[in-house]
Image (cartoon, rainbow, N blue to C red; front, side, top):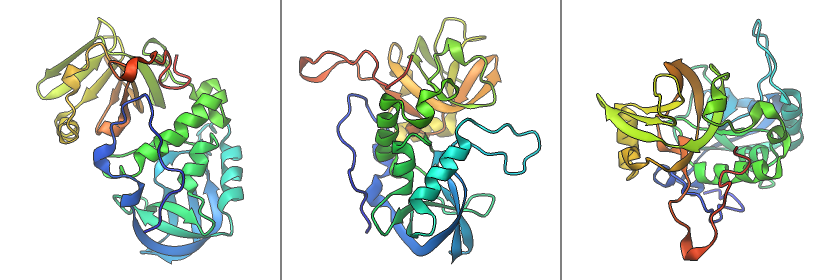
Length: 281
């Protein structure tokens, strides 16, 4: 089985992805050549593999191009992200590796790609600051490794992380980001379960302030990982997801990989990191 180079190092942040499987859990799924790069996270192959010739680089989200969608505003650095992926992958032979659901609703393969030279395309795009970690409940493999690559790029302010458009939001600062994918860092003011859904509130007024909601199915996923978000009152977290408007701004967390926890105490008496999530506010 193909191994990812430079695997995860120990971090002062609790990573909630251990139960989902690491990079060594990926399963081989075929070999092809990248003949075209569509955007920063999608490529076309020179032949079909398992019924499709298009691959969505699962686990990451690069800046988006309009790609013919009427009224769609191009995200900052979208052309640059596409060009970077072209430099890494265009014309190269790649091995497809799978760690969850294999095909999306558009018929694209959901795979991790590795070049013959050992480059992991997801890891390269994250590490160079041209993508964000972007997971789903049915595709959660190698998250710890990808999170580490993203964190390093954030701390160095590479690529997208130098721009306010992609900056980590505060709970109060996400109010203007409805309908967008964001990373939000803050301290949980209260945690409670109501009719099977767990709500993590970040300020006293849950009717208008930022909230994270974990429904019954999501709660089961957290429990399977040995996690009980109801005990997280007072904990600092980083949550990622699409921001909707339900009373106030809200992110729905369907699986543990959407949330990182700052540890409640530091090991060996070391001073706590005042900014444990890189460039978080």
